[in-house]
Amino acid sequence: MPTEAKTSADLSAENHEMIDLIYARCQENAPNFGVTADCFKDSLTRTIFKYLGAEGDPESGDVDSLLTQIQADDLFLALACANGNERAWWEFDQAHRSYLERVARHLAKTEVDAQEVIDQVYVELYGTKIVDGERVSKFSTYSGRGSLRGWLRTVIWHSLVDLHRASHDEVSLDEMTENVGEGMAHASFAETAPGGEDEMMDHLARERYRKATVSALASAMASLEDHEKLLLLFYHVDNLKLREIARLVENESSPLRGWFQRKSRSRDENPSGRIHESTIMRWLEKSYARVLSLFKSELTEKFSLKPDEVEICLGLATKDLSGSDLFSQLSAG
Image (tube, rainbow, N blue to C red; front, top):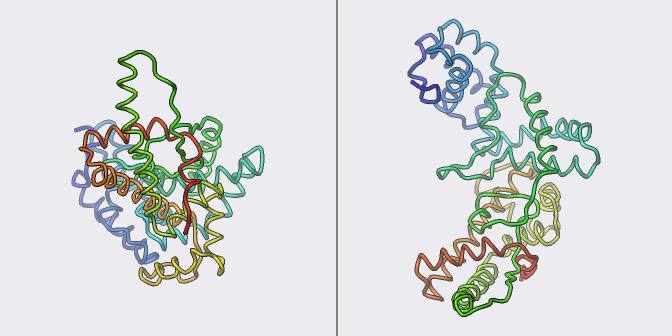
């Protein structure tokens, strides 16, 4: 059986007992993290068979030896953060944020690069890609072998390398619901003049969908709630970083402050009122999803477009979301 197909059922009873003991200790130390026994066991199982399963089922003693080396509390925290647990994110921010900043400043060439890579690391750790309907967090790659801080140092280094390779020239509207990245695309919808009869006909058909696309996007933006507009304005027009928006929200005079406090009371989040980057990312994700939903509804209801025609409009947005007009037209009303 392939290693990736192995499950906890392939482990011995002794191994299960040891994992249960480790989980019980972690759960006692952090009862509010919301990590289930199955989630914890699945993570350890993947690690066991990744490192010990190359030549068949590992010996029970070898598994026990590996389990004694696992940084269990670090793994428990990482799993909770990967699942979006607010308390875990708060603990992570308190315990490791200053360390991340020190390492980034040490490795980066400039303070600007250091600050940018911190933002990018938080984006990766929260997870912005959706695979099979599930948000994928960078935390899911942490195995517990070695300290969390050692792993974070490696993540920072890779992010610094990627920083100089990244390009955000083009992004689809669908991807907006999956990705939260600095320099998220805008819309200008520029197009060169057509030539020839066939090209002219294609242009006329395309222009019809183009007008519907522009109109539907404008309507979707106008239909957003005030706090959603403000978030997008702060992020895309004012070019504020995630941490800068978080600090703004903490300010008593911020127009987003009252909205956040209502959400916090309804969900019993962060009694201290401190906001971290993952919270801002979640709000942005929801705003992008709202834009996409409103955009599709407008095309269907106002323009009576069929599903395949809606896809054409999404394709136009994919190609043309590269200017600077889309978010700058927002008004928080």
